Image (cartoon, rainbow, N blue to C red; front, side, top):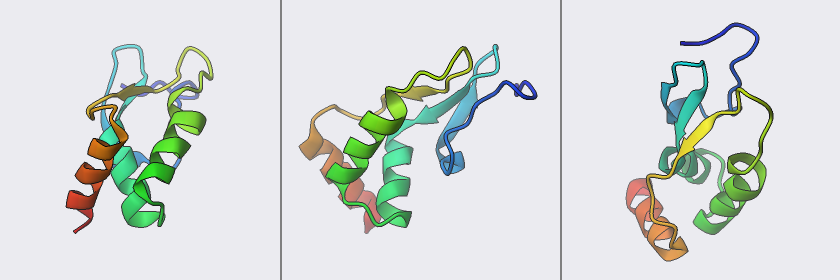
Length: 88
């Protein structure tokens, strides 16, 4: 469900949307967001992870702030291994 003029999106990450909540919030996959940055924005794995952690995932912009599902292990080496597999 998208509520007109209230639902907030993370710009450029439509391919990482995995659903919505009943109250109109968008739900994103963290792994798909990282994959997008590595494959299409020429970031390496660590830069993509740092960018998302500092600029997107921890930002609160009101009641309709998107949700980000942690579908990856928090270990940076495992994140890099996962992304390298999907970049091939």
